[in-house]
Image (cartoon, rainbow over all chains, first blue to last red; front, side):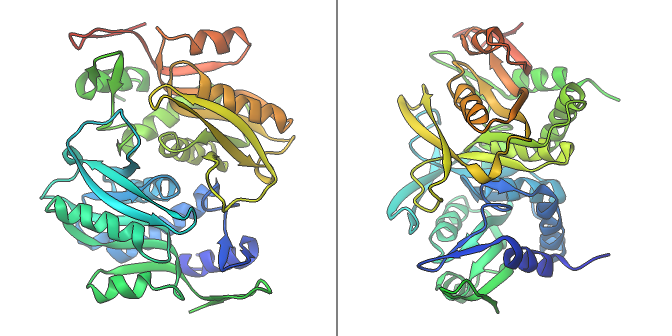
Length: 195
Length: 195
């Protein structure tokens, strides 16, 4: 049966993650540039164990690095996946939900949009993303779910930087946040400590 | 056994696609905003039938709308998936392959990058994307594969706008391009004609 997916992801982070200056964790060899789909399947199994009884009807993520994980999770839940788009796209209809998202990595704020046709009041929505740090991306997706009048089941996160405020903020708002790996600290000597 | 995936995608385009002015085909209810993962699985089976004997070691796509299909194709081929990133990301190492891609939808040129660590001379690369029109995105990915000294197996495309020049240009260069739906014309009355 092997190790459970939580331990698997933590072990993979220790094995292949790299700590850069300023609290940046690089996991681009398996999570958000090159993607290990077998690992995503095990993560999807874990999310299904956590949220499988919640009658999820839609997975919601945002471009770009959440899309791969979200698709494998959607496959496991047998439901469609919607990704919020950065709103530069002219090629989308006007009837959209909008939210502002602050990117600390890129040092700017951008708008994401979801077509109203793809989030209905009857939907039970599970949010999926690769990282949770300050919580700005998740907060934007939550606003969109609320604007749609849909039900928010919770959020499934691959890696939570528990030393940043997003997770606590969202849990204090009553959002069920489940993270497969929770990082307590990233030291400049490259050491990664989990919660 | 049902219909073969080629016909399935064409039928889905007829059923759920919408033709907008200026030769724009909107397939955002199942392909590139909301994503039907069951459909992606059938498309992946079709690509595996076409390229399964080519010993593909890596799937390469670019953000954002190619990622979902590419992940399900990578699952079928049991190999990692890499997506070329738009190069605004400060959060990536300097050692990258670069290419310029022209976006006709957004009316601008942008740079995409792939970390050198994730494309090796030993790799046999299958490109995956949702659309082929002018061929700029695929040409950028092909340049990156060549710069890496990897072997290009070919390109698997969901929807080719055969009335635009990209497909012919790439086939004339000797690239094996396989498109699951090839559109001959999009009329302003909403009619979609396939090749």
